[in-house]
Image 1 (cartoon, rainbow, N blue to C red):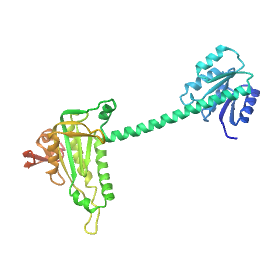
Image 2 (image 1 turned 30 degrees about the vertical axis):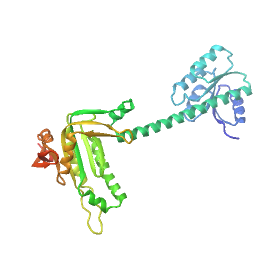
Image 3 (image 1 turned 45 degrees about the vertical axis):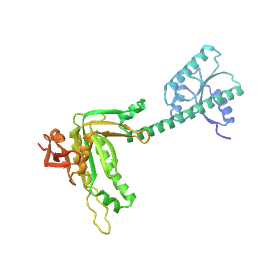
Image 4 (image 1 turned 180 degrees about the vertical axis):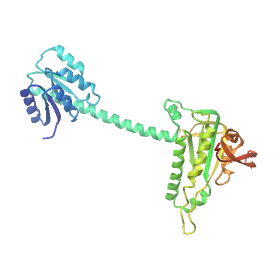
Length: 357
């Protein structure tokens, strides 16, 4: 016989317990018995019951009190309860239903009616359990979607999209932008199988992502071997330049831990990066409707890119604007005036480290 479920029979009268137990077992149920209210509550904490048959009139703790305790417990309140009592009293029925009982049967009960009432209660529970399982699955899928969304967009921006904003574009008066790329990446890419190249880039950029997260900055995107991050948006912060400077120094320390894979024609060697930094106003917003991205635009971004592309391997090149914000607390080497594409002659500096004073 197929097991119909686990039922707890609670009654202080042994004859009643045995009678109910035998009838339920013949119907295919597994039965556990409790002779008082406290024993019933203890058993409910240890086994996943499908149904409780609960006598109303019991000494010490009556059925009303057991029912009240059970329905107050978030872990147990979903278990259906059928009250069984010799009290042919409408007030008792109403009280039990108000406390959360599924049904009420009078003693002596009709076996056919008992079977029908139990079947109805268990079907309701089955449907409730199925609904809860569906809701749990929906919650899991929503959490997955949320994690994926936050991998694409900053949380404040994702929240605005979820609230129904269709166009997100903001101006920020002052942020600090960092561009970084790996030196000789094109030659490295040509010498490595695609899988090894992707694994290497993933290790490097995952390290950078952790640094960005630790410092409360925002990674904007990667393009090939290029990495773009910014401080001061989407939530403005006064120390954006200092935070980006710390990120750049730690990125330079991190990249030398990675090496080019050895080949038959060359030994492995530490990787190096060029990093460029600039400070100023930017526009930022969500671009696109499919495969959308949160991106930056403006002269500040273009100049930061030039600081990287016209930099020197192993160096962090910054504009005069960024230098002025950092010079009290950081060490610099003046590079002097260089001809910057699209900007003309600019004086730039190399960030060397934190001022020990």
